[in-house]
Length: 258
Image 1 (cartoon, one colour):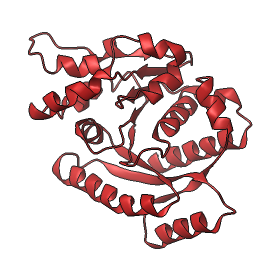
Image 2 (cartoon, one colour; image 1 turned 90 degrees about the horizontal axis):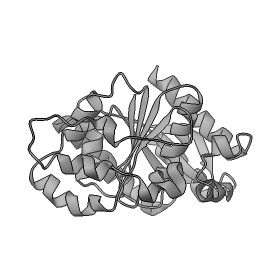
Image 3 (cartoon, rainbow, N blue to C red; image 1 turned 120 degrees about the vertical axis):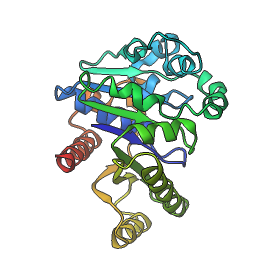
Image 4 (tube, rainbow, N blue to C red; image 1 turned 30 degrees about the horizontal axis):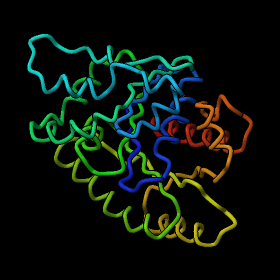
């Protein structure tokens, strides 16, 4: 199963959700790959720690090969790196992604990622893609290349207003490029159950018939430690409430995909 975690709004936890779900997948014996398409490289740093800065080749190198005409096919596996966690690999990001963006878009290389991931169909059981906080070439490439889209949502009015535009953008990709793409669900992140506004917003989204997932991810300082130690929650503190919430989210997604 290929999943992209996408939201045009920054700071909603895309990288954290990608890496923690992927880590749980890998811990259960699934051969799992994370692809980091955000030039900031948060997922790369989360999974590789200090090794991320020196990781080479990267996803930017992969896309750069798409701009060079060659009779020799490029093997996407050569851009993939092992992480310290069993069964979990990553294709790391690089700041050069920003410089490549315009060239890739002008030469319409939008299907290169999809074609490359087709080559990995027998190599990985699960692929998770982290995206930049924008609807750009890399995000569209990811939406074209996957079967499922997860949308992180933090409970404020700005996020709600942006959500409707985001869903329309996903529908456009469905109609024009990828009929198999489905919104797997809206992930309520940094949820505060005792606050009235988050409860109200979630209830309203559910009443509108939007695909809000049952699992909620709490706000916790523990996730900062997880980032600092470059260790997803399932490995850092598997008994922690937030780690268990990620497990519940993973179970819900796996159950809905069966």
